Image (cartoon, rainbow, N blue to C red; front, side, top):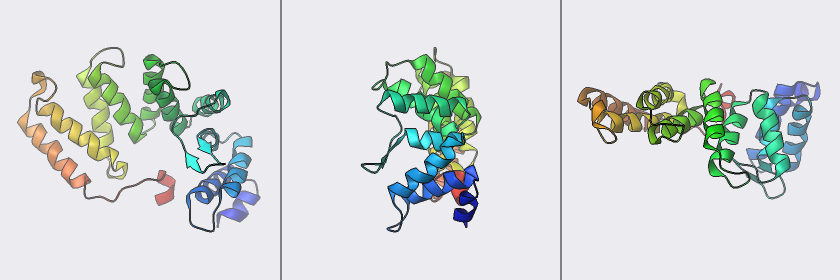
Length: 209
């Protein structure tokens, strides 16, 4: 279904086809994945740019953080074009500090950009930074805000589950006594248990829609 649309120049179809070719069954391969992702990237498709920046086509592996200056530049381009995946990966790059110098301020900036687009991983990441004081200061309200955003959606599994568990711990007084609330602790513990029974979702949302 996607191939004729992709061949007709549709960047979204090219991106989806490239993604599926890379992570599919025995009939798929990295050569075709690179071909279609590159086609979409040349049209400026932000998610295709992000995948190319984070993929080692030779050895067959996805990566959250690129290891080369070229990969980082590609990731920055994709992030600035609005790809939530690229924004989150760029944040991870600055947080890890292997390919670039560690910069928690930039990490928090890009995590927040991705989180505002509904990126579940980024929501958990920035919540954790606020909880630990890595986003500039300890701010439990910000941490709670982003954990709740993530935990509210069933489709964010398993990140929604982890967010609900974090909220249960916060209200259980594991971090700071000022937020002890047994009723809320029980609510989020129950929510986490419910989410733990939902099937893991490893692919982008469009894969399931």
